[in-house]
Length: 172
Length: 219
Image (tube, rainbow over all chains, first blue to last red):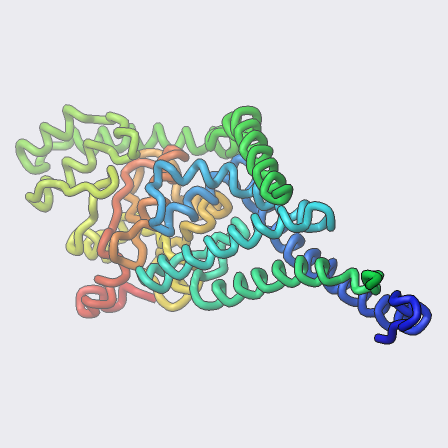
């Protein structure tokens, strides 16, 4: 990056093309990561919303033995909607940080829950991640959730650092 | 700070949506409404036939003394909320001379009872474990109803002739331990009017530990 010593301002002609490209790539990557995470969460929430799906999800939550079965209905009803709204928030740059905070919170909680029930207690249970059966809770789920957690972080970090277009330097 | 505000807003909106969905959508659903009307009519017919047959069997002389009287008193009495029939429970207790044990509101099936029913084909066996565990091995003739997808698969039980009502005993088993999965499956089956449900609490763990007793009874 070169600056014009006479004016103490950036030489836009010299730096703009590369930085603009970097800006675009970072932003595109940010959107891609956000889309992947949000898409997964929307798909997961779809399988948990509805009278039958919510009942099934309550059973899956009960299988974890973290909550008493009597209380598993409450997260079974509310959690899918948090997933939907957090996913939508993650998609839009203006609300991305708020969505990412919720996503990260949920993912961390899911990782801890799977670790506690499947690894620590040794329960052979379905993860209930998408409301449908067929995905065993274990290291595989922990790895996938960790990946989603990293992608969530990147979607925010890349977007924050995205505006790499040169800032005007302070005149001395 | 504004992001935290955003998080709070999302949480509040989620709670409101959830409460609204429960009140206006989820609570209007019931298992009996969900089943196809034609099938339910058939199921009800089967159920009344089963009640009549059970009553006739119980009134036959020669069944064990006091116990048979107890059974007759409870004849055709529909079970408690857990779905277990008191009458059949008393009958089974009489056979084994044991006090019936309960787990999560359901009578517990012990090893002898399970082996008897398995050999004589006098009970339906429902495997509450996951599909990958079922594929590795299960009790002969058991029906797969994984606790992670009960509602999706419960109609498959009706399709293979495991019907709601006080028919043959239904023994639900899982991997062992505290057998949470089988309790969940049993609860949902009771929602669908299944009765005479037993939990084989020791489950597959005991089946593996007693290979002689279950010889030829697994697949």
